[in-house]
Image 1 (cartoon, helix red, strand yellow):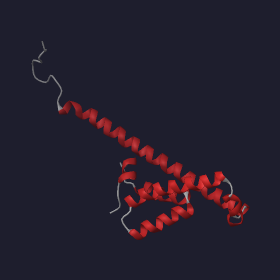
Image 2: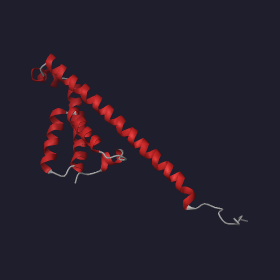
Image 3: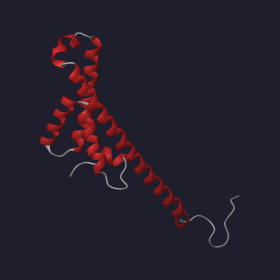
Length: 145
């Protein structure tokens, strides 16, 4: 036997859920705001660190003089294959986001030549382009118009 509700105002209505929905929306908005700011901080710090690392290593050692030696190391070859596999994946994502073919090709070349420096800069540009209330979903899926 099912108990029936007698009287007015008993039971759930859309109005009774509005405060809950408002709270959830505000919480998600705050979470998006904090997540985006955290990502801006992390990606900026990584960009500065990678620029420092590449410049200091370049001053210490010439890659082109070391190329034959580095190419003879199996782990170095595996690292390069790993790097280019990651660049391929990131480039596919960038091709999805960008509209202009010239921009797509230019950014792909920068990804290959500059590695994580170009990738971090690219993602940072989009992090700073996000509007208030935008989150990681918009960062990853929103396409340029």
